[in-house]
Length: 377
Image 1 (tube, helix red, strand yellow):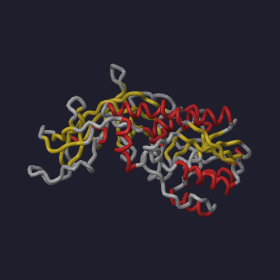
Image 2: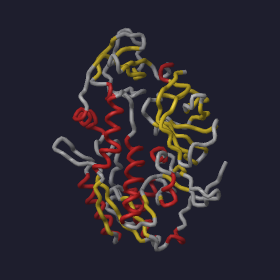
Image 3: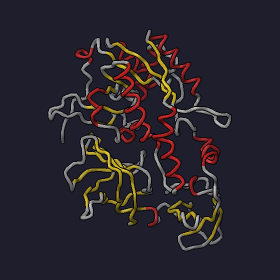
Image 4: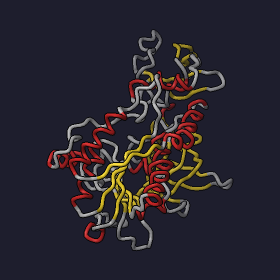
């Protein structure tokens, strides 16, 4: 297995200009402190990616901007603000809506990293602000040895916070100019450093869900852009046992929020979403975590994005079919029709069309692709 050097060579970078994406959270705040402390010339950039209206309670954007300013005042760093709302709408949000309308489950955070943070932001920092590097507070790493002349994307060292899954689709050509200052730290260490540097964000709660929506308002937000179409909840045997608010609100493997417990003829086990029939507007469910309908032996893939290009196939590697899923050994290959397919050594739970499958070899994130079709065990 390849050993990578991920330690940032700060001594070699002293005096270099780095533009840091400062979100107003603790991770990017500590990143600012670390970069400044190592002698880099740091400019902070707060990105506004969403335009509020009267229906939105956005992810505390004004508060985040205020917190970012407090951090910069504490560290003596200049803070600039840039509005990428138009780019976000065109490159991320329209795709997000079209996928939900088609009954799929997209991951907008992956596309946001690809199109906004490591494209629009990168271009602005390098071309307009003349940055030597950009930096973010992601829990990820990149190699610095480059023995093969290429830079590799690696997992963050904190297994509970590693965000390489969300970064797999970025253009690998930008990696040589990207720094991940907290990628080698555990989350408790980041919190401790924030306290040490007396940063205003030291005890700020981590953001969750899709940033501009927030977890609790997802239904309301989505209904603002896509009309909800209620329909029947149907068992795998075809029995109608309830009603759903709209297929777009459900995802494969979902257990909570179905409101169909206590069926007289059921086994008493929890119900799980296993499929969506867009043509009939039916949500298909099954009972029990061990149901065969929840497990998949293979997936086909579209829109591959690999950091260093598509590897030589077939390839033995591991795969995540969603962010919190454990790695599963698999074989990735291309069939006679040129279609990418991953076959799992052990069936995986709740693979969903529209989500991203991301592939690894040890600590290295190779890249991934969008799940197109799933094949049950």
